[in-house]
Length: 291
Image: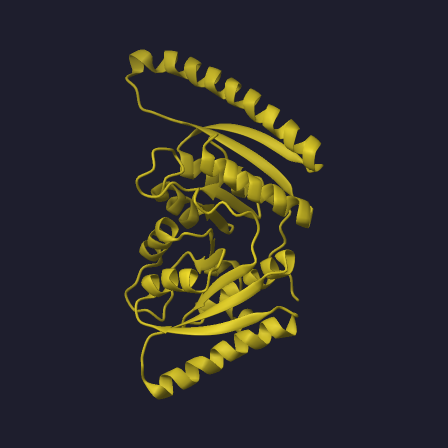
């Protein structure tokens, strides 16, 4: 396999919440499995104050930053000692999603793993901030809600529509399936009930199945017709998946559907972890040739 998804550095935005701790548990398992390093990032969210008290607040930020570093260093040492993996610690002051995205780029991160409390959450890892990270980050983002507390993946749900971009997720799913010895459930999202359309669409899905078979990865195909987001969530439940892989931008086979809205619905509505992949990360011509 042409390994386009090498995981060497994993970033965890860490706010000491339950969902952040869950993300860290997943990251530790993955880091041990693939030989990756972990970067723990705590962000002190900035606020706007009148100039008369701005100086005093800057001193407060410094104290919070120092306290956060102390806690993170203690946690990092515990992880290192128990798991024999390298853990780095960072505390930054600024806008949360911007700092996550910029740190990921500057630190050459391969995967961001972060918690999300959904749209009603109170922490900085609420769904809206998670979606902004997904949209701005240069690398894949894996998000977790606290009810998805199983560590590791056995069934990967891979939605595929009839656009060229959609199949760019396939090598990412393959790489994770190899790491975790997981099965891939291919979800064919059909736009029409027309027989000729469905026949041609299923040929494309068979090519995806052949790709997995070529790399000794177990896979099965399932077909849904209709609403993309609803059928994606429906498939994760019916197929009992434990990881869902989607794109960060519009999947062109569904006219007028902006991927940002789709991603928000999936991240907040999925009962299983969601990994998002940017289409621009791979040359689409090179990818489709492999099928």
